[in-house]
Amino acid sequence: MASWWCWGTTSPYAFWAGSELNEADLETRFRSGDTRALARAISLVERRDPSVRALEATLRPKGQAPGVVGFTGAPGTGKSTLVDGVVALLRKRENSVAVLATDPNSPFTGGAILGDRIRMQRHALDPKVFIRSMGARGHLGGLSLATREAIRLLWAFGFDQVVIETVGVGQSELEVAAVADTTVVVLTPNLGDGVQMIKAGILEIADIFVVNKADLDGHARVVTELRSMLSLAPKGNWKPPILATVAARQDGLEDLWEAVLAHRRHLESSGRGRQLAEQRLRDETAEVAAEIARERIRRALADDPALSARLLDTGTPYGTAEEILDRGR
Image 1: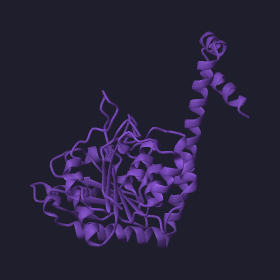
Image 2 (image 1 turned 90 degrees about the vertical axis):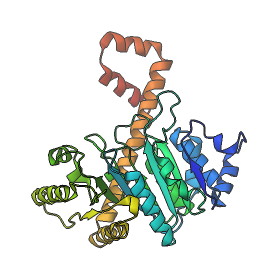
Image 3 (image 1 turned 60 degrees about the vertical axis):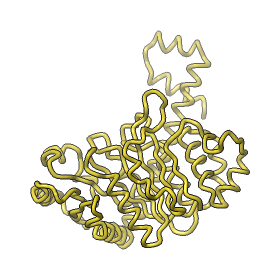
């Protein structure tokens, strides 16, 4: 498995230096462990290219599904440094790791802005690490629309662990909890009060809290506020632990990963893991159906001037949409 860094691109062919490969070639190289083939497949997924569906249909996941852990939090909390440390820890444990880092998009090229992904460059030559920056492309959930499909490709490729890092956290950026098995919310001292954390919906999505930069003043206050808020939350079978880390010094990362493993054991023993997997498939199916319906409606309106004119006259999008969808029955 050759190491390959993918910084986000608008072309699925960029990784092949202009070479044209057919679907059979792509599948062959993918199965042989060529990470350039994996990179191209993810690029096709990001572009919503229908040709990738044939590849996905022929691939079968290898072994057990990889654990998926998502890191989210406000900008400046040190998420990338924390993820970098977790990758190093997992490599010491002989785990292969894939990182999907969702970045904002350039308004000029559409490609992912790299942000501080350069912090992870020490893993660039590691043959068991794959790091991909994916553009959010305006998606309010904080994750690329292609993230779920990319995770399946990483599973088929044979990675042991998948780590997701989101753009940030906010009222509309909570989707990581619907994709990851374990959601780690990263906080840091002096970046806002408890009221703001409640507004962001953090209590609802966190499986683990990490107070990073714990060597700064104010760390104890953040921990106290979290404990106070958690005491008001509905009681459940899993109580999110609150951990202190100093990612820049690798402090606390062993405890963090042990908490992730403990949460996975809880999911398995309680049956919650299977429920989440089923819910993810239902949600993804609904998203795919909505995507297909949107494309069908756009094509119908573009190809049928009379329909567009009638829509303009009546001003009733609901009726027109139902009419177009009914045609496909």
